[in-house]
Length: 266
Image (cartoon, rainbow, N blue to C red; front, top):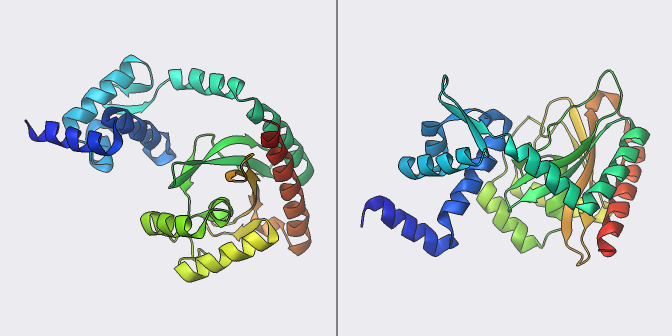
């Protein structure tokens, strides 16, 4: 048995479907804005996937138009058929249709960019819906953009409503990255901030993830009482004060409660 075959067997024993898992990792990797165009060597290196295995998986994804390939730059990127799948998934998710209506109302009320965020496994969060206000100056985000679960108001809000032992495992695995000089990187201070979020029912961050940007987030729960996603409004930190923060927080919490009610009816 070759070394590559041994590696695949070991991975299969762990996951049960190593090729599928690697394909998902590749698609998730390419979905990050900074990785939107990557060579085979870069994908193989960054994901720690055997180069020949990575090439075979990319070829299959290419055949199904889940990735595309530029012969000039020799780079892979997400494929056109993912647009079809994303649109179809959106059509099939009735809860998301209704949630988007509430998100639009929130954006119109706050005049800020409003988003819905869902977890990818336990280590990252991803934008699944957005509504941007009709304003000359506003924050713009991309659907599918992802970021570490320990970052910004989104991540803190999501983690605050998970069991503490689970959160400590996630923090241990993911770490707490310092994005700006206002990021909370001390572990105990980070957990103290989660306690405050649980008590008040929402999270606030000022320039903790992106300079000049604030975020206010509230949790959305499913019908079992587990946190399912996070609803947030984000904008320029220079445009808010204590009064507007309280106003936004109230509106975000109300929207989160409305979306939570969708799950109770499912």
